[in-house]
Length: 328
Image 1 (cartoon, helix red, strand yellow):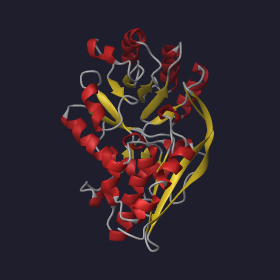
Image 2 (tube, rainbow, N blue to C red):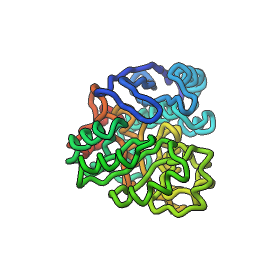
Image 3 (tube, rainbow, N blue to C red):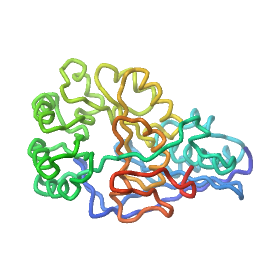
Image 4 (tube, helix red, strand yellow):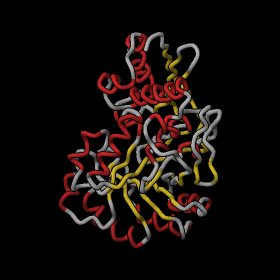
């Protein structure tokens, strides 16, 4: 592939209100948008640099543009997998390559990837971390949604889940501890959360400090998030986790995400497909990974005050396949 031009820029989108997890709050998101073009066809990808993994917007853009000459000389999506490590920079490029291939071939990405045609998906909706009263109010406002994801990692997580359950009596709940629990906290909370109808907890223990999960009963299924990136992560997760959360920003793109999903299923893991707080351009490729997943958490656009043009359409919590004008 020659005469392929690349650009990468920062785009800023406002959050609807604010979004709070145990690590802090945000009122806007800063994403990296990559464009590949041959002058006739254009492909795009988006990534969300994540400080937890030492990423910055400027650093990701620099990493992407450092490959400009190689891409002009023929570096393609397959070679990219070895050329860059998993992470936000490779994700944006990988997804742009897929979109570009779709535009050149006139075939959708799902077909190029050998997947089944995607259909609508039901996503979780995130209840941001706050006081129990505020979280109950958020839950009540969204009690019509079938699946709520609740951010935790405080000294009173049980009180917060009780408040969310009071606000949304019928919703299935999954919780994200964001590495904020100890083994003792999990053992104390798990039976209570199961009683309250919680189906799953993401990453209760810090990544790298999760060996104890292998040696305790897990009445509340545990999902690896920060502990799971790409396929090399899986061997160490077996026996500690019941599910993995696949995020394309962690895998470094759709290519690795699909391979990770296949290998994880073969090893007996349940699949959750998640996202960073991004726009519909991030969610579109992730939706292809989410087909058939036990849990889908791709609500990023629902938490924004402004989204991309040709954004994914949501009917409540049901998200519809992306318009090719957006991606794929």
